Amino acid sequence: MPPAFTHQQLHQWMQLALHQAELAQVAGDVPVGAVMVNVHGDIIAQAHNTREANHDPCGHAEILAMRHVAQQLGQWRLPHCTLVVTLEPCLMCASALVQAKVGTVVFGAADPQQGGLGGQLDARTLTPGANAHTTTVISGICETDCKTQLTQFFKQHRL
Image (cartoon, rainbow, N blue to C red; front, side, top):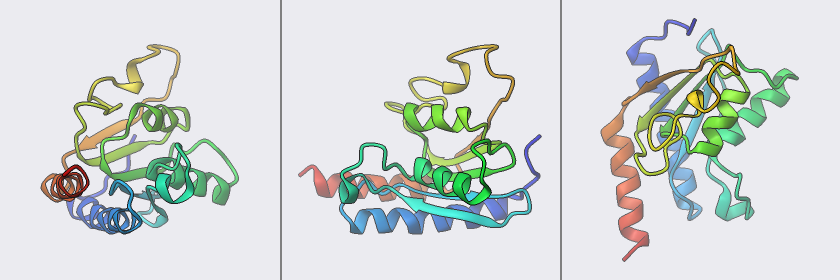
């Protein structure tokens, strides 16, 4: 059962994720930011894309936030955590979120082309019945702000 966070809390955390996304953009990476929250609503990790800076194909904000929390907690299962991210996770990240049993994923902008939690594919349904845990997904939080940030980035980088 996901924690009963308010819309206001989700909005505040998404603003922090948007700030993380700005840090990625400054570093020349796709502006995606993530914040991981525990059941008490405490922020336990913040991350942004570092693929370009670290030459790491797995340097996605979601993966980095999960790694940080898993190391901090000393466990890879994260069912009591909520990930707030500016863009719908890709299939790699969505699969990792499901494998880590993250309780809830909140995203701002949908990614109909590469999204892995309802876009092209849904990682939660790729192996029906194989995973007793179901990750809850909430979409559209600060959607306009998230879309605008990404759209402006791609306009600047694809002239």
